[in-house]
Amino acid sequence: MLVRYFAAARAAAGVEEETYHLPAGSSLEALLEAALAVERPTPPEGTPELSRIVARSSFLRNEVAVRDRSVPLDAGDVIDVLPPFAGG
Image: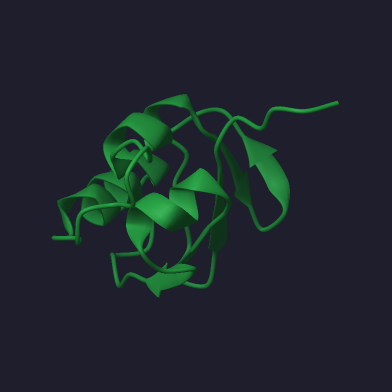
């Protein structure tokens, strides 16, 4: 499963994307827990920790919005982590 981070999530994660090898059928919640368990460098000053960003983020699974974190995932899924954006 590929996780892609955008905006503040990318800054907090320290990478643009990561691959995780979880069993097929693992939930989005399990994938997020795996991502949050990774030891990461301290984010840039003023950037919240990844766990705080993920808690407020929206997610896309293969470019389709996902609101239910218990949804089962497939090995080839791409998950986008989209933190709240400001602007207009």
